[in-house]
Length: 73
Image (cartoon, rainbow, N blue to C red; front, side, top):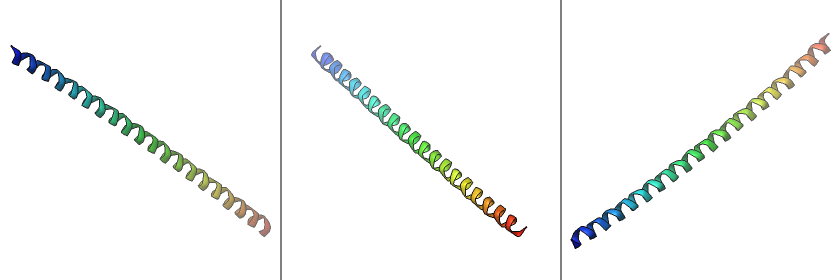
């Protein structure tokens, strides 16, 4: 009988350890997902900024072109 009780206690400890490991893994996965989301957001922001800069450059180029055309007239 004593062996069964001791074995039962060990099983509970192993179950707790498994649960703790699962919780740690879930937390790590959540952290990784959050980091990935943050990286994606940063990349999107950088892309948007680059697009805005390109648009500004295009506007400047058009203005210069228009000025030249006006001067030619």
